[in-house]
Length: 265
Image (cartoon, rainbow, N blue to C red; front, side, top):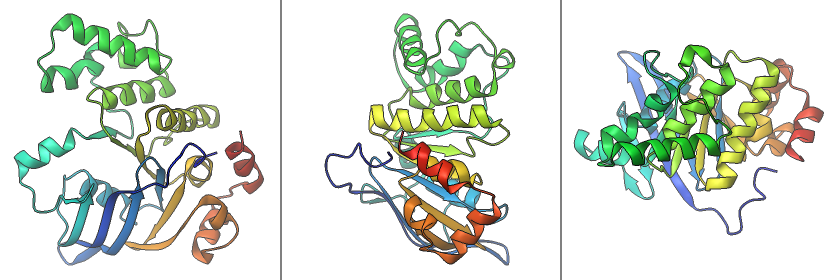
């Protein structure tokens, strides 16, 4: 399911090379080397305290590594100053763990926020674009609602609509299924895959949800103690390519048969 959309061989979109990051005397990431291919869904999986959040912050430029490079389409982001990095961030869409919607704003105002901050569009055109984006994600007649009036799955979709307003080439999802029931989790998984298929976006998903990772990923990276402890396609990992990843999956209680069936849909 995951890679069938690609008509040409993928090329590297983001390359993380030899990245180290410490806070004080504590090394959080050590010699991280990962490549995220253009148009693919890559999932970074791992338990709490394994460095997933730190890697996310490095990818979107909120932190700088102590050593190493992070290349976006061949451009090293590490040396960039704040002004240059702000321009780069327009290429990146961010969907936060709990959607991070502003409770005092309606859905329309939340989704319109990036356009109001970063474009010179008039109010009428902004509203038209917001309604169109919400419609693309199956959200109609909700623009007047407040976040507190939305279900968990709807909040995730509104957060994605906001992330897509500046037409990024890459979207990062932070724990997109955290706190969701199994039915809503499956809806969010479908949202991630369908958005990639429709728009051709590169998608990086930070997650602790192994079942979700196996369903949606083209490639999975397992972090353990700040290092890449295993990587591969879901089929490779389920077949035992990485013994540590296999143990992690088994400890998570993942049903491999269910995951394989979902991927074939």
